[in-house]
Image (cartoon, rainbow, N blue to C red; front, side, top):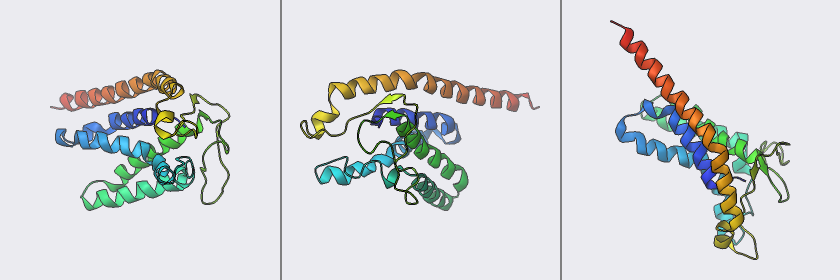
Length: 192
């Protein structure tokens, strides 16, 4: 799967698309939420980490389309109680969650079973794209342990590649969001 850095870049892209819709005081919170929701499917590493094998539950139920919809729906309900647009923020969170699943589908996964349980709980099959763009990020190799696995030269190269591949996309999204704001500003200033 891509590294947390790769998923964080995707979260930053989501932040770029909506950050103008909140006040300056909420931007840091929004950025934090963007990063959290883009990385949330990997929460399944934590129980495995406690049991000595971070991969034990990884890429299962939390990596499903259903879970993306459930998390987005829960956020919509919470945000609506704050008198904000629940549907809008729920869709945004769902898209951040889906960005994680999409990136994971594009990984050259060498561990069995390959891919993610995208259609869980309706199917236990693992799904992976026939076209892979990213190298696999190794969370755990028994001979190295967790920390040494995460800091391995393979993972450092994987992160560098993710940054190189995702930077143009991030730039395009940033420019798109900026130009959209500029067009909106010009439209508002044109009114007398």
